[in-house]
Image 1 (cartoon, rainbow, N blue to C red):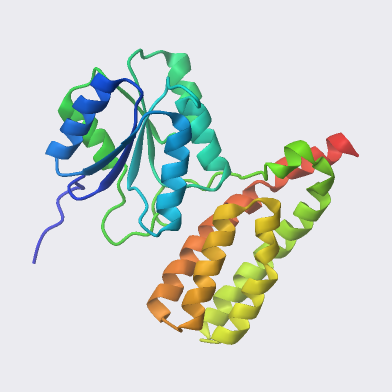
Image 2: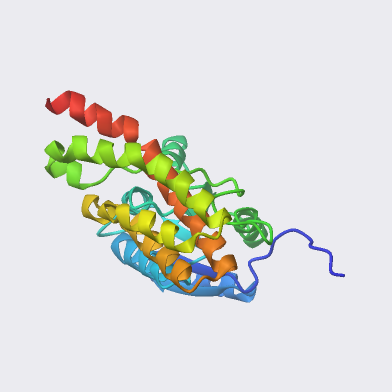
Length: 257
């Protein structure tokens, strides 16, 4: 019987995005010394690519540590981009100069915490460990990472798609409930059919939702109950972000028509 004492970043995967080579080396060293496996990138654009591709390969990073002042895409822009795509794992903002404004900006862009590069090693590690879900919890559902509203990027260039997006969002809630009900009944075939009727999500740019949908379909095809429940919970979290974006999509309709 092992008692679970807090969380540890030991064996966790960390993506460190930092453009300054000195900081990158020392931070990588600090996190690795605490047992984490650390991958580094040097700008915000690479950070978004790495994070999404790791998620799609079913090997997501446990935490992203993101310097706020980076080239190509700043930490704030990178966070916004990830959250817009429905990425809902922990992101820690980090900066050399702490200002109240900087702190508010990074938190409102979707970062979960804000930390200083000047903090002690212990305080940095414990900030990161506080972001990890306790063992056995599913990311983003029971764990307190809020689902953040997503608005499809297609609407910034083609607002006329907004009524179709609303139609999709309106059908989404019922269909998600129906899928959940069919999974409980072990009616795998019928659940696959409803999943197929939601595949237009990818046309509106709901990329993570579409990927999770196809992962759920694959698990329904091989009728692996545990995997099905896991994939359904992941899909539900994505759907929640889409449904939360409905108000913003309605605003676009009111502006353009």
